[in-house]
Every structure is written in C-alpha cells, then in structure tokens.
Length: 515
Image 1 (cartoon, rainbow, N blue to C red):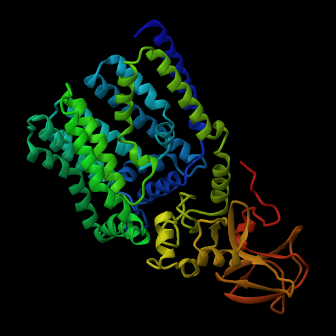
Image 2: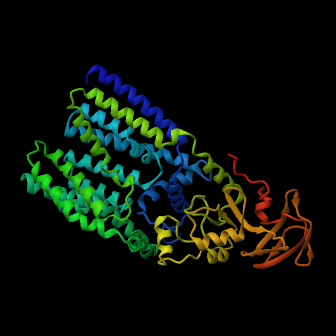
Image 3: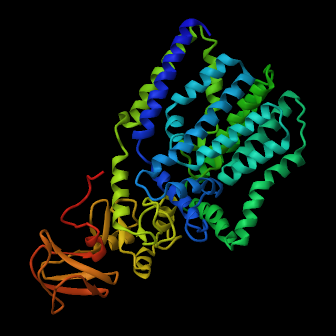
C-alpha cells in the first residue's frame, strides 16, 4: 500500500472508531431491539418462545442472548449492554470479510474492503443494533470463510444450520449458494465436488435439536404458526406481489445471460460470489414479501470486496478511496441524525416502567418495549400484525385481553395502535408520561368510566380530591367495578389506578423529561 494511501487508511480507521463509539452510546434504540430484548427476557424467566409469548423469528438468537438479560437484571440501560455482544458479532463479520477478500484478491483489497464496509451507513447502523440479523450475518460470513478455505462440508453445513435457526432467511442464502454453484458449473465447466450428505447432516444438527426441544415442551405447533403461517399471511395483505414474481423470470434470465457472457473470469471464487450476489438480489426482489436494508446484510461484505477491487484499478485509487470514505461519513452523519443523543426517550420510558410496575405485572405495550413485563395481548404490533388486523385476518382483542388479565398499565398513545385498541386505551387509560395507567378524567357532568375493575384514587393537582363517589364520601383509594361512576366535588379531577399514585406518578406531573 503506497504511503499516501496508508495515511488515508489510518485517518479513516480513526474516524470510523470515533463514529462507532459515538453511535454506540447515542444512536437511537430501534423498536426491533426492544422486541428482541423482550423475547430474550422471556427465556430468562423460564418461559417458552411462541407458546408463552409471541415472536415471529427463529429462536436461536434469543436463546443465546437470554443469559445476558439474566445476568444484567432489570435495568434502564439494558439495551446498551445488549449492544456489547453485537460488537463481537460485528468483529466476526469484519474478520470474515478480510479472510474472504484476501483469498479472492490480496491484503490491500482486504483491508480497504473491511474499512469501506464499516463506513457504509446501512451496515454501520444495523450492525450496531441488538437484532437477530447480526448473528445471522456473522454465521453466514463464517460459512463463506469455511467454504473458501476448503473446510469440511460438515462444518459448513453445521454453520448454515445454526444460521437457519437464527433466521429463516437462511433458506434464501441456501438457494443462492445452490443456484450460483449450478450456474458456475454450467458456465465455466468447473466441477463441483463435495460430500453433500455430510453437509446436509451438519446442517440438520441445530434445527433438529431445537425441533425436538419445542416438541418436548408442547410448543411445536406455535413455532410453526409464528414462523410460517403468521409471516406467510402477510402475502394476503399485499396485492402487488405478482409484479416481482412476474419480473423474476426475466431478471433471472438476464442474470444467467450475464453469467454466461463473463464466464471466462480468471478466478473461480470471484465468479462464484459475483453470481451469488446476482442470484440473491433477484430472488429476494422476486419473492420476498417485506424487503428492508437489513435483508441485504449478507451481500454487503461481498459488494465491499468487489467495489474495493475495482477502485484499486483506478488511475488514482487513493482519490477514489478518499471520496468514498468522505461520502460515506457524510451519509452516516446524516442517517445517524448527526449523532445527537437519541436514547434519552427510551431511558425515560424504562425508568417509568420499572418504577410504575412490579415484576409479573402486565403492561399493554406495542412490541414488548418495556422488556421486563408480560403482555396481555399475544401479538406484537409490528407491520405484519397491523396489516393482518386491518384485513380482518387477526382479531383486535386488546380491550378484552386488558380487562381479562387486569392490566392497569399501557404504553403511550401513537399511530402503531390498531384503531379499536387505540380508542379503548384512549377512553379508559390516563396519560402519566411515557406510559398510561387505567383511569380517566371526570367529565363536566361528574361521570367517569372504568373498564378494568380495581383500586383507584381520585386526584387533583394538589393531591387527593375531596367529594363524593357514587353517593359515598371519598376518603382515599377505593375499589371500583367496571362501568360508569359519578363524582361530586372538586373540578378537574383525574381517576388513576391507585398503585400508580403510590409509586409516585400523577397525570398532573408528567414524567416525560426525566432521565
């Protein structure tokens, strides 16, 4: 590597380290991070994923992460601690990218490919978050390392089987490897050898072990429903899926033509991975129902390698590297919201959740964002759930479930609530800041409504109200049945679940900004 290139490389590495440190502590927590933490918490509590609470991802990631939740205990900054193992997985992906790039090209390409991958905004930000995709991508890259280094098919299969137990999207990666191998074989006449039975045996170990476990605990049907039926039902809410599937034969045909056109590639591995990138892309676009940047995580290291190799052939490669690093840094600054602190709102919410509720008390949140509390409603309100409720595939039973389970705390209002659930919570819960408690405001005619029977207090700004409830003088917390009640006394009165008041919360002193 020339001297000026080494200087640029070191500067870019230093900048990447600084940005990584900033993002680790300040980049906002994604709703998926909260959900995955909640699922991992369930395992730490002795619950069984799918059977006892909802999730629509494969189980291995949450099983492996549950000890971190157990060791850390209930804490407001748990998501920050859960980002630590993501740094390890991040390192695994970088190391694997280096090994594959060095095998395909040389050390110079390998070093720059790793650096450009680190600075690429979608990879930089998604690899930071606590999510299944990071373990999935790390296992995929380890499988590629084993593949290019000629390791035994059993080991490659075992790694890919573990990846399948992390994400069902591994099926797409398997299709990619198979089709890329077939296209490479037909185009270049390269003989494909391998002990396929050994690879299949290795692949089966982790999924089979998990299947046996879920059958033994009576959760197999729920696993199948959550991972296949539930996710597959999303197709019923998408009327434009035929477009991608109609285009797929033409896109795949163009890919095969391009592979044939450039079949004279000198390096078989480069050719194979280039074809794999194309196969994965056109197959994902043609058949995947929901496509997001994280679905392309397995391609990003390979694209970084090929892009780096291309830039080394420029007349002034150092200029190309400098421009790409600069553009990536600016884009990263923009997409990370200038690295302003976006975590405070989560800490505020967690503070309130831990102070307002006790272990075992249910919270009606959206996706398990209070992490340590069970939910009365089975499904998480992600896009797939909301779409199926909107199309009548799933019922919105939030109101019934909240009343049935005597749930007195709910997440704040927002657009992710389905209409019926949102109306119920707005009518029968009162704002305390980031969370709400069962209760409401006394109307001008003195009436108020209770949906969840329980112990309530009547409050004014100065403390407990003075007056008469349903003909009886109000002297403190009282048990109210579901229905309409009447208060005669002071004005501007709030009715609040009594334990919330005892634990320091009031609708007259919202705790939105405490963190």
